[in-house]
Length: 146
Image (cartoon, rainbow, N blue to C red):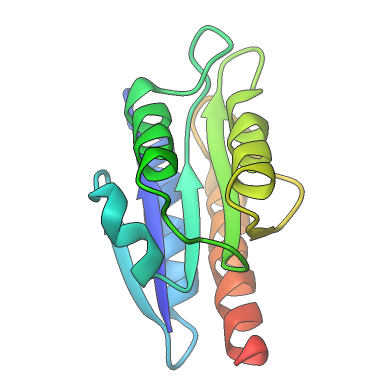
């Protein structure tokens, strides 16, 4: 079972979250975790679960994540039924993770954990624990699904 934790981080906050999410997923036996800030669109289908970390800047997701999702759509990446989740940091609005969830569900027909994990500004220890729990939850759902 392969889990991709894909993220973009400009200030380092979402990167801290991504590392904690990956730790949580890796703690589940039988799960292989790849933590990365870039993967080619054509490789997305090789993962059983995709967890995307995307901060909100000026009410939008980062261009790198947006471009990847658009390229995956153009190349008809088959993500139907794959497990997905989203997290991100924000300063004042925080809507980018929800936009990614909508794309995962509506465009790629993924099975998505509905609520994104949002942390305002820098994640504290409690926030990082929530990130680890997200990674663990996704990994455990994969194991039980198999």
